[in-house]
Image (cartoon, rainbow, N blue to C red; front, side, top):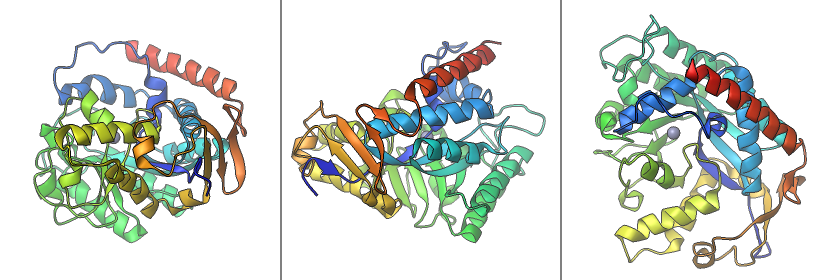
Length: 357
Ligand SMILES: [Zn+2]
């Protein structure tokens, strides 16, 4: 491979529904903790999503991924008022744009059967209807040929019953569980609660406050962790295989890698960019098809982590997925990017109006 060409990059943790959230109105109360960011922003937002919003948000996120050389997305989705069909909607949007996706619905018991929202769920409580519907959505999507995992929001918003059911379902489907783990202090008990369930094929997201060892690959999202003030995950000290994700803040993996590098280096001067290059490569264990894709860059030292870690202005010139050119001359080829932007803008507007009412 010439040194201005790389395989397709993999975003190992994304939330494609967040593409249309940018510019959303300020929440009713200014968040002063991680849990209040969830309560005041993300849990209000996901409860306002419908399938049209989900489609155009995913299409925009997929198009932006291609423009950054990312051809594979591992998505984690929640839309409690539009559960059924949400995963096939995301998969269709990605297929229409030409991006590979692994989709999962993140089940949670934080919505009671009476429609009330809880910020912490009693582990001894029973599974909610909403969690059951989320598991069924994962099941029907994967059974009908979709590429996916069983999603779980996080241990602290799930009963033990739901965690066990999600693990059992993933086992029966032969896929892993995709779950946020100890992102903030509210989920500090995740390690002990998941210990007997986690398997090597699980994707553990964040692990910032993880106090025990868990089986599975750990996905580090440095920009999101900084944005949410949850602390540093110290991924290089963890025994797990490390992958990189964006947690919904775009899908520019070269950018995330550069940030991961300076964050790593901030606490350990002996580290090198090779560590980050390894984290990028580790993603091909879960998305090997990315190796069939070709990204042509404006920069010709793409095979050197010491170059890419310090080059902040590189651009993607073209992207091929399985030999098909899906991005060139600043634009995606399968759909009209102006149409995607216009439709996504309309859906943003609808979403913001719902949030305001
Ligand atoms: Zn996330």
